Image 1 (cartoon, rainbow, N blue to C red):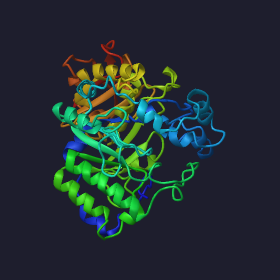
Image 2: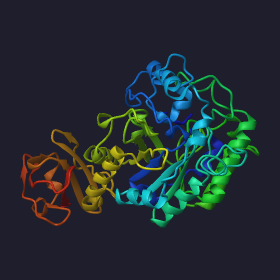
Image 3: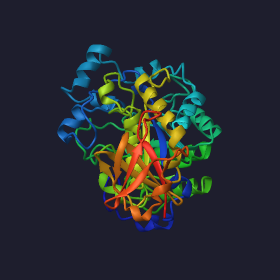
Image 4: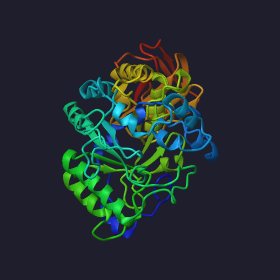
Amino acid sequence: MAMFDGAPQRPEPYRRFEREVPQWYRDAKFGIFVHWGAYSVPAWAEPTGELGTVDERTWFAHNPYAEWYANTVRIDGSPAQQHHREVHGGAPYDEFLDRWGAEEFDATALVDLFRRAGARYVVPTTKHHDGIALWDAPGTGDRNTVRRGPRRDLVGEFAAATRAAGLRFGTYYSGGLDWWFTDFPPITGMDFSAVRPVDEAYTEYATAHVADLVDRYAPDVLWGDIEWPDAGKPEGPRSFAHLLDRFYTAAPDGVVNDRWGLTHWDFRTSEYQQGRSVETSAAWENCRGIGLSFGHNRAEGPEHHLDGPAAVRHLLDVVSRGGNLLLNVGPDAAGRVPELQRRCLEQVAAWMELHADAVHGTEVFAGGGASEEPWVRWTLRGRTAHAVVEAEGRVRLPVHAGRLDVAGARLLDGTAVAAREVDGGVEVELPERSVPGPQVVALDLA
């Protein structure tokens, strides 16, 4: 599959979809992912570590992803299984769907927070691996949020609020796994080949879902996960190519990620520390949670979460290398953003209010070097380079000074910054910060 593969080869039937990635996506730089589901009721996982830093044997039995709860509780001896017995009496997973109220969910307020934080697109889950659809998806019977639990079309509410805020709307769909449609043993390793549905029945089921999402909501981003059933990949009446035709007709400047199996993609994806080899691609996106989980996890504390400055540093590290960041929010069962996540986003919003020009619409600045001590990253917008610096006082910037108008150094609000050329680099005097997080020094190209 293409997911996390450093050099996948697009099959012949899908080469006709190759094209330049639309400028809106390249300029956006920052999106918000939303993982919300019945798993937000138990909201529990072990906060073991980031994907890509925990060995495979440990990962699944001690999975830090709360949205994988339905799988983790099936692994004998896992702490999640013990927690499920002690706290929930081993209840059937679907009881969480009936207990999921979403009684305080306000899509407009939520999306406004994302907009203020600088996000340019929003991608909520529409069906995760547990198979529960957040809209009245065909073939799901009453196992969706319109018929049970919230009794609302949550995808439709997200779509309307996102577009009303002037942002692009995307849909996440798990095409590779569905623990309700199939009867497979729990997943305990990274090789999903023996535990994912691949037959024609699931192909028809998943195809009907994605077609319905496209027809109802015309998403700008089609974000798949894990894989796509093998029966739907080759040429023929069930080919994924027909879904792509449908999608690009509805959204000519839409984009598709690389987790639909070995089919087609507009951009590559990494996740936390996994799949970092794709981050040299022409278009790529890193996704991660504010904490260690995508779904809300009550077992996490402040030590597991990014604060605002850390989130900004991660964003700028990604953007400075030519990528986008899809930062995840996991609401609680009522639909509220948990306090640690909200605090992070509010701090990002305060930073972006002053510094968004160093993020949106930028490109890689080859003339500047990244540094950890002090922390420095660079972006370029038009003919202005931005040094993003986590420091105050006198700082030496790693850059070829001859390429810049050093005398014109300034903050983004126009405040002059004392600067001089030293040993080929640039030394600046930074004032005290007005908001938490790195400062930005703008230097025009010479």
